[in-house]
Image (tube, rainbow over all chains, first blue to last red; front, side, top):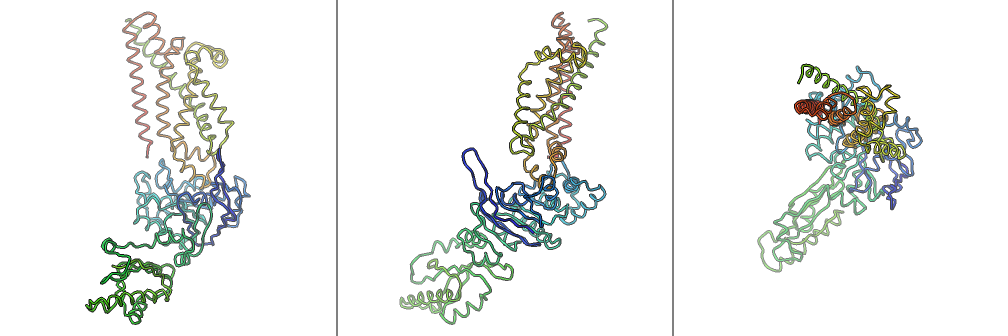
Length: 358
Length: 217
């Protein structure tokens, strides 16, 4: 549905030329949700603005719904833009119009008869759950409500593509979840293709089918959300993934942590789970083989498209030491078998990192 | 004071009001489109055009630099050409409108600059034509600010119109000048002043009220 081919965008300044995007190729299939993630200044906003030619790329091709936008006249482009809805971080609602007239705005632009406008707007108000706010002005609405109005407005013309420019970045976490589920619902119900840009991996995790990572104007990694989450290749991608699935060592443990084995202390390890492993049976097997149990301190496991992805902080405790045997000899032994347990986990393809001893 | 004075003041008020509002109207007729052009031809705007922008900008600056009292005299040939005379209310309207237009153009440009650029971007994304952006986005969104701009212009025009009075345009200005300044009639002069202050207050209060009415921000 959306095809970006070798997009390059340069901004010509007085002193130098800034390359915002270099040779970005990206495609989104019909009905899919693609997320583009990147840090601020990576070129995300420029990229999404290229899709409806709010920014004209210096080179490359943009094909949306089989139409090569770069070849259209300005009049044809105006028509083509009506097939693409867009929502923004700061909503961009018209303060001079109430909710009803904001949603009616794109319909007014293409001279839809008033009667049809009324019908369509009330459908849309229902879709976004704002029937009772039709005659309020945007200034009176909360951020989430404003974004709902913006979504309704973007959908008014029955577009095939919806572009979301950091649509949830100005919202609180609970509202973000609500808006994302609304977007997902729209995607499923109307089979609308969504391209969204964000700097939050959580957004990608929640609704995207595919994800592309943008850094310094270049596309450094792309793939299905599962692939990227379970096996990120690039350092930056890893950073984004761990930002979405991250746990911290509790303060109490951090204070007790020592980097060398100490008598009476147990090994603290960070496990990265990805794929279809059965964590419970894995720990059972480990206990049998290495006589070491795993005490989960904290964990964050997510279920993304049929795969478990997550991180776990575990304390590996040798069974002997639990029996109250305090002799030095057995302490050494127990540390050894804890190391063995780590090796066991590594052999089972679990990314295991020893953090120290607590 | 003699009996005809009341009638004289009523006539003066009427002439001043007519001059102010009519020249305000004509001023906006010229100034508003100029202001919109100034805005949309700016760098990065919907009809970016450096040449047009510079030409209008220079013209506006030149006309704003001419002191109004000189503008009246300087424009006499042009005024004669349009209204056939250079004396009276009708003749005053020409320099008043021309004097107000560049002022209005700059204020309009400033009002439009206050409209968040995201709104223009959103409208472009929705496939709005430049004309639609001007009529359906820029003007309605800037309306509260434009109303304030009208208020300021009208008050300035009240002042200008009294200056016109000194050279025979009529209105309160002429009364104040003839009876007060030339005839040194303190009472008349002060009444004229009080009436002008009253007029300014009425315009300002009405302007504030309307601006608030149309402001939904």
